Image 1 (cartoon, helix red, strand yellow):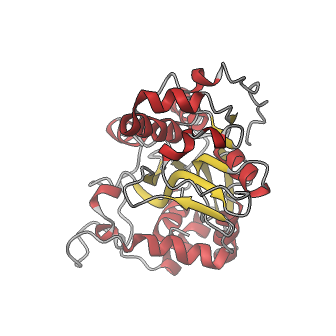
Image 2 (cartoon, rainbow, N blue to C red; image 1 turned 120 degrees about the vertical axis):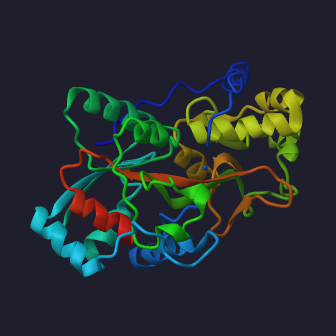
Length: 317
């Protein structure tokens, strides 16, 4: 269950500098697919794996069973599994759950969405106390997966066509792989510009005309947003950071809030979020700093329902 956390107090303009003061690198990014209908969602995620590594011949050790065979094995095992998934709100992955459940109705798919930084410490505790709940985890905190793999806490499993996933998006032994691609940068509402020229670079955001018109996730709360601001600071300097701190930015917890404020027109610009459905414009490319990453998924080696989790990983719904 997602914890309902009170929002931190809204910073004053003098406090804004604090939100920028801890810009430390973090190894990490959301192409927002959660608004797609389930069937299109299913197709989109599978298509993400067209990022092919060199070669087309499947390597040894990959899954050879058909989806129907894996489905039958999952049902015989008990027909259920639990997945812990990173996300800002408890409904963030509803489309994912719906797509899988529609395709495999005999599987009871329990999906628990919470901040990745909450999931990982709970999983660490459960591994230590032998009270493990999830069978499968998909988190934004990418650094956990090599650590868990080296400790033997992730099952080495290579799904069908594993070798076709770009090598930067998978563990060579199959302990984890990316199954979604995300991107973060900044967005603006083209219908709320009120005659102002659209900001085409983060350098434009420090213009006083945007004061009070920007929303952002707390830069020291979400690790991907943290890293995005680190990139901005490196690219544009601390003078840029100081000017941004004077922009009376509406800082909020959760990457979804900035996007919602911009979509509603309450704010014009959102930093540390994503989205591109009209009238929202995502700014990235052409030399503009933005982030992208593959959200990693791994099967716990002590999973109670390994057959069902293998079905999920093979289908990557």
